[in-house]
Structure formats: C-alpha cells, structure tokens
Image (cartoon, rainbow, N blue to C red; front, side, top):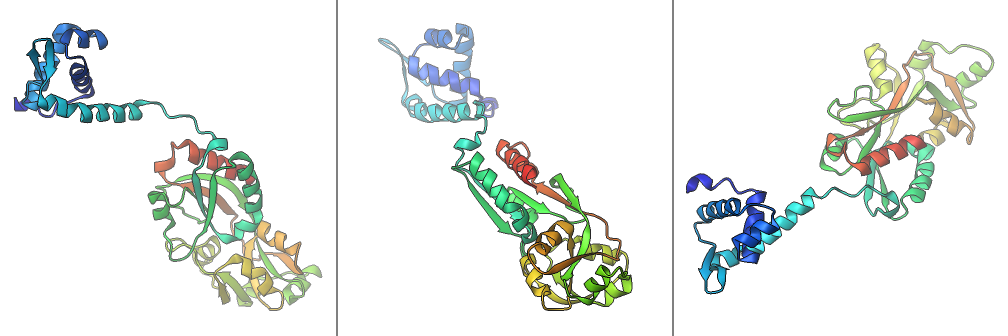
Length: 307
C-alpha cells in the first residue's frame, strides 16, 4: 500500500473529483473518456493512497464516505490551480497593462533620453507605471535585477557581469568638457594642441563610482595604461558637473553626447581628449529570470528605440 504514496498525479485527481461528484464508475468513465476497468483501477489506487474506500455502495448507488466528502473541496481547488498553470498566458498588451516597470540608470543619461522615453511610454502604456532609479555606490544593481527590484539597468562598465543578459545600445567617443574661457579651450580654438601632460596635470572633476563592483570606463582605461590624472573634485551626480565647470579651471572627461548637449546650453567647450580612450559602449542589462517575459522584452525594445 505504501508503494503508491508518492504516485498521486493529475489524472488520479481528476478521476477522484469526478467519482466524488458522479458517484458512479460508469458515469466517470464516460465523462473522462476512459474505460470502466481503467476507472476501477484508478479507484483502487486512490483507496490504497488514502487508506479509505472513498465511495461505498448505498441503496441508490455509490456515495462518498466522510473522508471522500472531506477531500472534495481540496481536490477541486487543486485542479483549479493546476488549470491556471496549464492555461496559456495572454499576450502582453501595453495599452491595458497596469504593471510597474523599474529601470536603474546613471543620471548622466537622464536628460538625454528620459523625456523621449516617458513620451513613448505614456503613449504605448497609458495605465502602466515607470520608475527610474539612480545607481548609487552603496546599491547592488545585480542583486536588484535578481530580486526583481529592477527590470532593467542601463550601464557602460567595461566588463559587465556575464551572468546577466545584455543588449548593446550605442557607443560614444570620449571628450573633455570645460569652460569656454578655460586656457586649454582657448588654446584648442587657436589651433594649438593639448598634450597628454597637459591633461594629466590639469585639475579634474570626476563622478563618484556608482557601482561598488565596477569601475567606470575612464578610470578603468587610465588604470590599465598606468596613468593618473589630478582629480580635485568628486561629485555624486553628473548633472552637477556642467555648472561647476563654468567658473573653475576644472576638466570633466565624459562622452560626446553628454558634452555637446550641455555645450549647446551653457558657455562650455568640447575638446578632443589627448588620451586615446576607447569608445564607451552603452547597453541594457537584465536578469535571466526576466528573459522570457513579454513585458521585459517590450521594455527593452522601447528603451532601445528611444536611445
């Protein structure tokens, strides 16, 4: 008898439910499109598993025992839950979604793409919610992706974790951003060259790291090249850099898109870097747990179309 203890399956649950409802092996066989001997064999297995007759003969046919009646509700609930698992999920429709989507992003990209992202998000998913979270030095973005706190992370680290899924968005050139009246900017406009020594000895403004496990592309390259620049000011937000450059002798090493955007609005100059930095590659990261999610894939495509 104990040999059957671990052999309860969906078929036996369906047979038990139908037997308890119909009170007849014959009618159960008809409803389940099975032979009467097959249903009788299933009933014997169920009796062995439960240690109870489940159905007994009465004047008007077969009726459930007390144990059988007690099993009817949990068996009904179990079959309902199983059917929910088996039913194919509906195709994702952003127009009717009420889901919250969460993206971790460094703040230097916010002003460049967030307005367009919000515009397209609102048009495509008017009832959904979009949350943009900063990446800070005390936050673990990989854990946030694994736990579902973030759906996506936008990054540019030279070596992102291989455990995560990745989609490249674009690459950008590294340049120097400085005040328009900075001596090096004036020299560049006059046709003069800016040397590596000029760059390394000048006072620099730099961002504090926004990942505890990854160095940014600028510092990573300088470390590999065994070069050290003179960083005098560290700021937690990229958005602070442009106004801080206006009345100082600081240089901010950044990407061309960021630099040219701010140079169009402020008296700043964009100067080629004398250090041969590799292009900075931007990409989306997400956890394998969401790789087959229609919702996450929709968000990935939306962000990629904007960026």
